[in-house]
Length: 79
Image (cartoon, rainbow, N blue to C red; front, side):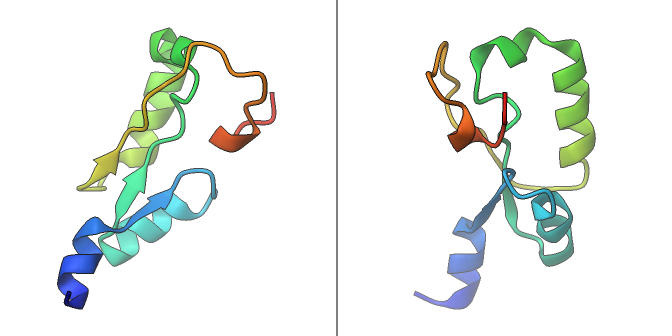
């Protein structure tokens, strides 16, 4: 497998606050973690923030949201 092929598959996790900037800089994919909890899909502020965060990133990965999670630490939130 060559590096170009690997680069097309690489997505940085949005859990890291620098991931969006690095994704733009190095033309990598980005995992959107803003919608780990399904309720965020209906929150216009969360949608607007995600749109701003992902502007200029060509490849996005959206993990499936969950309706309820006992702990949200895995999806980058501290609530």
